[in-house]
Length: 125
Image (cartoon, rainbow, N blue to C red):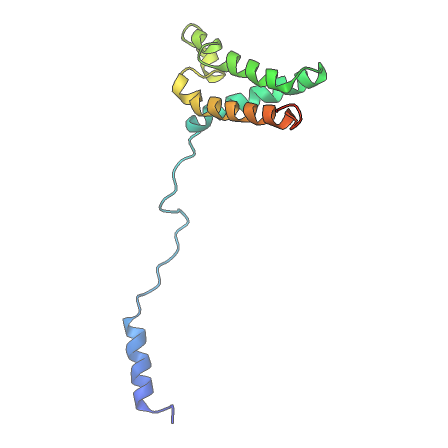
């Protein structure tokens, strides 16, 4: 019932229309080289905060002040201004205000969150 010449002809015709499988290459077509320049500002701020925040914690000073100090020191209006004179400072500071703007905005949001977290309902009214 299911066998016969018609079934074989259909199977043969279906396999002839199927495209041949391509061999997989070891290199991906959309692969691009890793570029850390877009992450430079975030990496500098996180690395500096990783040094300053434990120090401030040990001195029993608020870590919020540590984050503010890190932003001022590595930012474009701190050591970033000296990068033109001392080229080695360029890799440890952020020279352009546009590149740190997103991190600064996130810092303001987190600062407001911490202020709101410490505010009690009884004292807000």
